[in-house]
Image 1: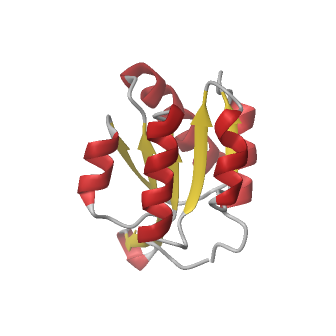
Image 2 (image 1 turned 90 degrees about the vertical axis):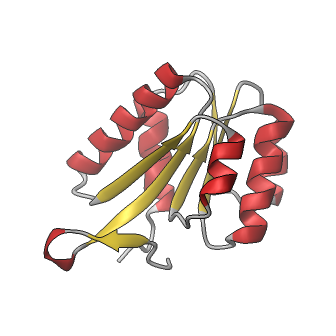
Image 3 (image 1 turned 180 degrees about the horizontal axis):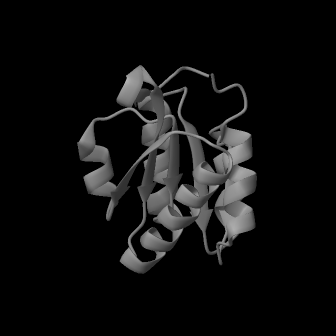
Length: 134
């Protein structure tokens, strides 16, 4: 996996993770679970949350992992744009229906989470996304 992160204290790399979620409460819950996962598995992390597709698209940053939770066709379109811009990013789609799961696989997304999201889903997705992380 290409190392996309920032050097932290002592020159150690941090995994850059983006969470794009319209709901502030859902974004906060997901951020907490990702932080818990990273603490348990000793993964240095830098998390950035975005409250809209436009905010995420406008940031211009590169991420090792992106949780795209905006749902529906907007979420799929966002994933497609990200895949074109950054082929190495590990995309995890989160949606209320299974409709976009197959489309997400066509974009070579790392995982698909069907709502409601639980901690065990985050663990599975993070394990898949971090395979090969150095």
